[in-house]
Amino acid sequence: MTILGIETSCDETAAAVVRDGRDVLSSIVYSQVPLHQPYGGVVPEIASRSHVEKLPGVIAQALADAHVEWAGIDAIAVTYGPGLASSLLVGLSAAKGLSLRLKKPLIGINHIEAHIHSVFLDPAAPSPAETLPLLALVVSGGHSCLVEVPQLGVYRVIGQTLDDAAGEAFDKAAQLLKLGYPGGPAIDRAAKLALRCDGSAFPQGRVRAGHALVSGDLRAELCVSFSGLKTALMYQLRQQPATDADAVNALAASYQEAIVSTLADRCDRALKHSRYAALAVGGGVSLNARLRERLQEVATRRHTRLLLAKPKYCGDNAAMIAGLAGIGCGVRDNALALDVVPSLTLGAT
Ligand code: KG4
Ligand code: ZN
Image 1 (spheres, rainbow, N blue to C red):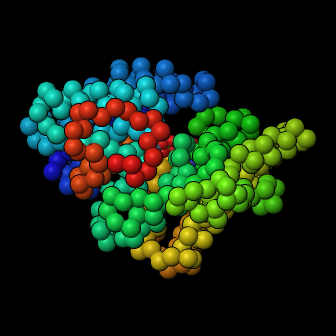
Image 2: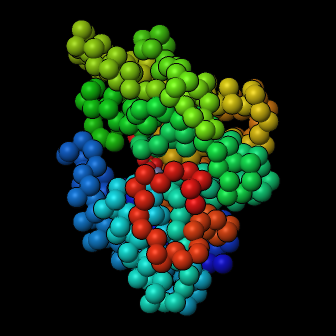
Image 3: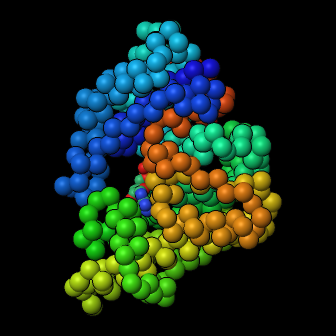
């Protein structure tokens, strides 16, 4: 199966051609970061307008780079949630149009499930079937969750953030530290330059969820709350403004350590209690150098294989969308009747 994937759930306009779920023939990502930078965050209206403008060219480029004609495409896969409604609509409408015009099946894909599949886009990675049962950590600007995958296409969210996503926590801190947008890479860079890192500077975000707050498969000890961290940083800066680069870098390193050690701790707890064949990590925050290091330590201690997505597939991309569709996942029945679902949950497909 050669599948064209389309992804427009947030601020990246992306298209890719993937064969049999893992062989990426092309992957084009047009990043809107410069458009949103002046506002310090994604502006939905600007995002959807830019998707409308860029998507046709991005799709054409994906086909050209893959050296595939329309006749060589077997199906169209598209993200239908979660994400920004107005952004999702652009991709879904385009995919429906192509599906009808070309008489090719349409496959609706859940964006978070696709982030998990991104680790399999590396030819060196084992096949998805070999890694079951899988533990997956998805950490991005909009989501932070720990997911159990007992079988292909079956997802159980066993831990998640109760408020801010990990990427959001990085972005908000970077704003407070005047490091610019997007915040994650800026904090990552500043932390690397830090001469010191005070691990006790911030409460570790290890807020144990009250039992009243969790339900279903969620386990309180695997949940996390990041919102207190940025408030702690805000008060810290009010009391003692960071006046030079050394002070900013030290704060960035300490703040990053609080987020990273909390995520590593949740993975460690999950791996301690159950056996998993592998730990897969996807989403923009998985680019964080310190997080990669800490998760490798956890995986080694728990004798579990760590699967990290290639850097180009950590953030939003369409190869993960076409890839997941290529292993038989996604909504296939009556997909032309799909609507966007901005708050689509995992495993709802
Ligand atoms: O997966 P993604 O591209 O988009 C969403 O689905 O949200 O993730 C974007 C998020 C942003 O919050 C960004 O600050 C964060 O990933 N990020 C990082 C790093 N690179 C990107 N966070 C920490 N360290 C990084 N190196
Ligand atoms: Zn994403």
